[in-house]
Image (cartoon, rainbow over the protein chains, first blue to last red):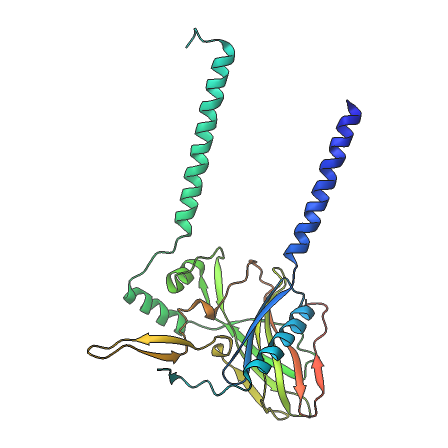
Length: 81
Length: 217
């Protein structure tokens, strides 16, 4: 009986450690989104990143966005249609 | 009831308790859901709240990593409102007691070179979230100051305008403080939110990058 209880405890303990580990990995997945706006400015937002990761990922994202759109004009409010 | 066997009475009692417990949980969840829904204010109330927020005083925002930075932050301020006012203004719910706008930041080039690009970031280290922008193609000479307005964090958006006897037309306009884009909605309730310059690029192609450590995290 004691042996069974020990095995059960071990299985539950390992499951908890494994799920906590997986959970923390998901929480800290670094993701950044960005978009090129007017005045050659690229706005970004990052989640799950350290500061260094956020800077690196946002620069990478913004370089890609800038390459795709090219330079953007001034931010004057304008008529669209 | 007394004629029922003991086991049956216990089952009925347990079932009754379970129903009561479930009812209490359902009622409390319902109450919580209702309390999180923003009150929808009239347009006049919303306009007066907007004017109140626009004229409210500026609150300093924590600055980090400033000491070694060649593009030094002189001042960073935000406007703050209660969570309920935020909901009335933007129509969005929040769990935070107070919500801050994106900052207005005044910087100075303390280097001997012209700055051509920089990255400014607002960060909540507790929730590991960051928001900011990369400004390219600028020319900020040595000793010159530069003002980052709140608008720099917010993308101009298309709005439809309809006037009497005229066809509706679309314009591109800067959103007002009633737009949730103007507000920092970090998950944490941390007071550790700070603003910092992450990267500076000079006219000769050299770059300066912030180093993590201490308050810079």
